[in-house]
Structures are given as C-alpha cells and as structure tokens.
Length: 242
Image (cartoon, rainbow, N blue to C red; front, top):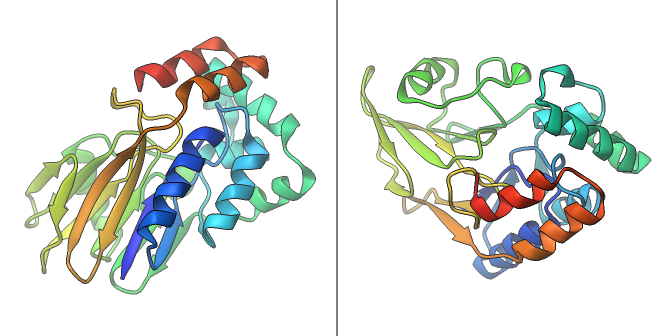
C-alpha cells in the first residue's frame, strides 16, 4: 500500500492546496491527516473542508480540540491562545461539530498507528523531541510504524534493538523486525528552518519512506493572516520556517 501522511495544516490554505495538488499527482492508495487543521492561520473553515475532501482519516490535534473547548488552552503561549480564540469565533457550526468528534488515534493492523502527539496519553499532548523521548514511547505501541506530528519538525526514530535509536531526517528503508516513530512535519507551519510545506510518503510494499517538501505561495498566506488582524509574527514566521 502506498500512502501519504500529513499533519499540522494550522489554517494555512495556500500550503494545504499546494500539498493537495502534489498528493493528487502521487495518487496514493490512502491519505492520513494527523491533526491540527486549525490554529495560527486565517482559513480554518476552508482547511477543514479541503481536508475532508482529501481524506476520510483525520485525527485530532491540540489546536483542533482547543478551538472547540475540549482541551485547556491556558497552557498555550499568548500568541497561540489569541489565534485559537480567533479561530473559535470563525468556525462554522458544522466545522465545530466535526472537530469535536475527531478521534485521538487511528490504527491499521500491525503496520501503522497514527497520533498527533504521542502514543502514550495522546490527550495530554506530550512531545517527542529526542531519542530518549522516542525510546520511552516505543513501549506504548506495538505497530511497526507510528506516525506523529505536533512538533512541526520532521524526523524519523528507528528502534534498532531494545536500547538503540537511529535518527534520520528525510528518508529510510523499512526493515523487518525494526520499529519506527515518524514525525511527518508540518504542512502549514514548518519549524525546521525550511519554510516549504511538508508531507511523508510511505510505501509498505517496497519499504520506502521519505519526507518530501513542496513550495507554496507564502506571501499569500502571510497576507491572509495580516488581513484577518492576527498577530504579525504568525505571518512572518512562515518565511523563516520556525
């Protein structure tokens, strides 16, 4: 099976449409979305609707649940909280109901698990930022591959044996007997100093897995944010990829 996994659109319609075009060119068997359709960007309704058109496999992110009062946004930084309050007001009733009913995880057989943040306590929105974090999380799922988002930083953690983690940043070959945590990066707000939108391609038959980047109209996305009256830093950071 050939699949594409994406995460963290964050209301950035321009980035999502560029990624959607790329996905249509790839024509995968399946597309999965790992959460945070909204937050930061100025097109929350349009992004939810475009994602629903793109895939039937969507899980919740902390900003999705924050926008519908299902997670405590007091822990968000002030700018993120301002953006999520704006988003909450902007959402249509139908899209609000849709976000409320998103699951926290998705599992496909022995091959794949998908969560927004971590397999352990996905509702608590922990981060996997290091090999040590990853090693602890491998104890909380059994599938070969666990796909995550949340940090906006693409990285692949490979469990080589019970104590050894190999880290990669862009590509690998899935090997029998090994297990993987794959952060697929962010479509709408990358934070690895590469402003291009991010997606992950995984072919379970060939074993190929790699992170791919897509150019999009950053200036248009920035203008949309500024025109909505959101904090300028949310627009400016798109150019920096951080």
